[in-house]
Image (cartoon, rainbow, N blue to C red):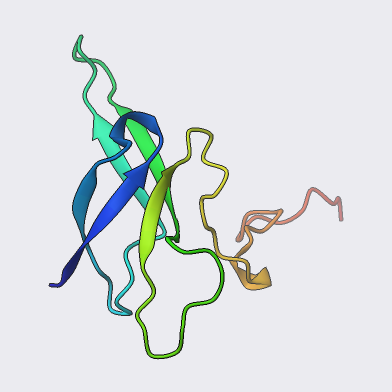
Amino acid sequence: MKSEDTPFEGGPMDGRVLPVLLGLTGHPPKTYRIPVPAPDGGEPTVLLYSRVPRVEGRAHVGLSRRWKYVYDPEGRHVHRLKWPWSKPDATPRGKPDDADG
């Protein structure tokens, strides 16, 4: 698998560069989660970083697009499928409505 050195901005990882595995398209994942163990052995804290372009604007034709990760403590930029068929149904399948009849 191929990896790319990707910089991190903001949060505890600010200024660090980590090798991130690239997907089949040659891009790193849209979000990067880093679990940090709790000092008392409890639930780990998860740091969330979102992928953004390194240079604002359009990439030049023929050049590969470079990415960086920006700290996202609220998880606002978590990417989800936006197709209508990917939304959960209001009623569970296999259960009839509460209509008497």
